[in-house]
Image (cartoon, rainbow, N blue to C red):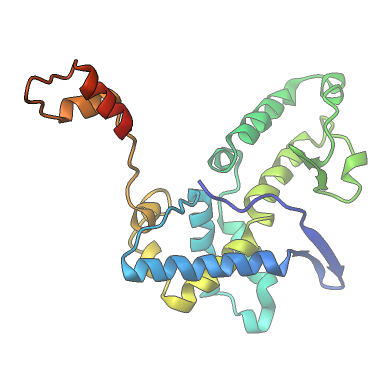
Length: 238
């Protein structure tokens, strides 16, 4: 399942607060993908682009919020703040994006009742797990996770992965999609959990096994399912 990759989110601080900045080139890619998906949907063509349900839920939340938040008056920051309050950023959703990261965070969460020394022995800093060059806080490499801030660390990781690095790419995708047709043509009819991918990509087609192919064939002229020639033919077809 596709989901925006975890990248460094540069936070620009101004008098109005902190703003997350991403590469404009990267956002243009998502804008193009949105247009591409919308055009394929209109033309009835299937794509091999299965997005994570977490991505579709984020796109839908952005589409919902865009009707209630005036961008001309408040800008995109108000839109993203509103969406962040609506979407589910719990630890259980991380498994849809990165199963290995979800298992790691679950293991860390079980350390809540551990001693302070046991948590300190893990040597966890405030960087994204698996991405030591990405600091979630300023000077995150020099900060360590303790028993007091363990829950805050888990919450920060989930928000960073599920929202901070994905909201703007998802919004760029939404804008590109809306340039061709309304996103509600897809998300108002199909659920973001699975049906949206089926509408865009078609149902999952699992590869046939050798035995399934043999049982679907009708043999004649002395050949049977046990014949070496028949089995060689099936192996070539797989």
